[in-house]
Length: 116
Image 1 (tube, rainbow, N blue to C red):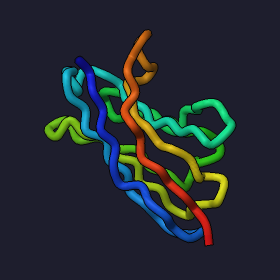
Image 2: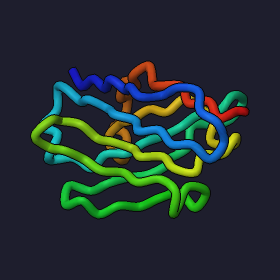
Image 3: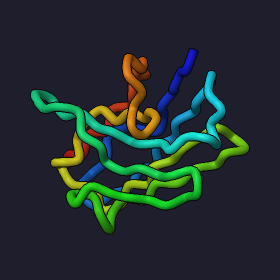
């Protein structure tokens, strides 16, 4: 069974940085594109960034130039470096395959709160 365990969230002031990690298991990690997603209260889950098996990346316009997605296939881990954080980045951040497989199970995610 595919599982994802996210970590690295927390409370940070506007302009600060955080680095999120997501450990994947139950999947041949190197064969799949991965994505970071987020869901703010009262809003639908949205794709924040994705990375292909070759390391090509893509970002939502709202985070372009501030966030960096990367992966370490040896560690079955995908990362999200978040810089110049804004209050509107506050959300629960989760990772999954990109695109998520039908019926895929989401991890608990990690809460990111940007506030002074």
